[in-house]
Length: 150
Image (cartoon, rainbow, N blue to C red):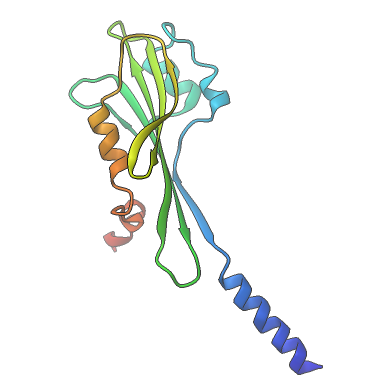
């Protein structure tokens, strides 16, 4: 009786060890939160108040917000692997009001738009988005968490 119970527990532990461990890093606002934004009305301050502060902002005075979310998966003793990354780009028009809301992901290593709400001739910096998404596989989760600061 004891042997079969110990055997069953060992099998259960082995099966549990093979279950994937999934971790999410970063933040991308939900579609319902984005629905509260009004193009041509909202400002950077009101966007941040409604959907949260961005992961990063545009460079060189560009009034764009970028929200980045990554999903990592580890199976058993295998190395942790980044399996998904999304970038939400919110661009503002020259007058400082909300212009575009675009969501990007990766498809076979290429940046692809997942959804767009283009309302003006304002476009997010594609080079910057390529850099944010292009590091899949070369991203070190430890540096994000500050593990190497010990």
